[in-house]
Amino acid sequence: MRVAAILLAAGVGRRFSATTASPVAKQYLTLGGRPIIRHAADALIPHVDLLQPVGDAQALADALQGLDVLPPVAGGETRQESVRAGLEALDRLPQSARPDLVLIHDGARPYVPGEVTQAVIAALAAHPGAIPAVQVADTIKRGRDGVIAGTVPRDDLFRAQTPQGFRFALLRDLHRGAAATDATDDAALLEAAGHTVALVPGSEDNIKLTYKEDLMRLERLIGPTLLPRTGIGYDVHAFAENRALILCGITVPHDRGLAGHSDADVGIHALCDAIYGALAEGDIGRHFPPSQNQWKDADSARFLVHAGERIRARGGMLVNADVTLICERPKIGPHSEAMRQRLADLLQVGIDRISVKATTSERLGFTGREEGIACTASATVLVP
Image 1 (tube, rainbow, N blue to C red):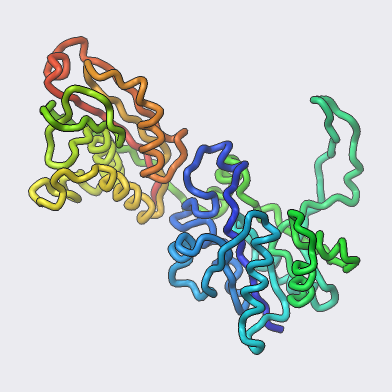
Image 2 (cartoon, rainbow, N blue to C red; image 1 turned 135 degrees about the vertical axis):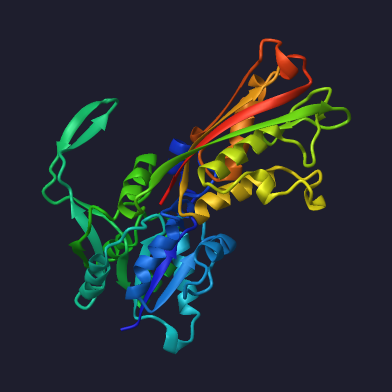
């Protein structure tokens, strides 16, 4: 029997984004040095003949580079539409290459024990559909208006997981004939059509990344032993006429900018040095020498993107970054949130891991005389 798997990656993860403010879709976050969806693909590939990704083509190509997978296809607005897109892509294959069985798996479930996938496939010899599930152990309460409205018997309750398995032609036909509703899983389509769906033992470790707490659980499961390392950065730039003032990636209204070979973003320069220091990889000048004309007037955002890439290349993660700008003027407070968000975007982390604040030097020294701006930064990373 030829087995295919459809790997779903078209979702935006609204519940996860709401708890983390992450600019990166949850399935592309880095876990143990690799994107979450790559872990999911690696877990499926040993058990299937074909893997059909569904979602953004470029993001999937980057995340799954080097793996033997079919070309990605675009997903839809709902999960049901995305599954249908994957099924139709498989159906367009030559007859000899089309699968007999198909697994549907969430790209945000990176840790799937092999025995779970094998149990699903084995159950399809006797049933048209099969899903892994874990029996509910906790007492279940029904709530209404903030109070208990009843207790739900838990004896026959199960938590459904993926990969869910089906006979390919049946699931394809059911999707083609299904009403435009957003089924939360594909087993529901078989149930509605009167087909039996087997339950096989799932795993408590088969976690779907939904909330921030799930990411911490997955990090404990998948991530290597990571050690904390801290770096400190410091930078100074003098004021200069006829230049825009750019601080932490944000253009700040002021009568002068800062002098420097690049755009002189003192905040990003200090933060880059902190990250490179935590990684023991020198300073910003080592990676972007001011003696090279290619960096003249360069956007310092490029430097911070590189620093973030170095963390991920080492299989690490940024725990937090703290930036302190030292100046009399301009006022930093009105711009600090925009700065935090810009730094978070460049580093591909949630804004809750970035701090930007400011202080004065009480009119003392060169910052007190408003001759320039100084910045200190610290960064803590976890690396193997």
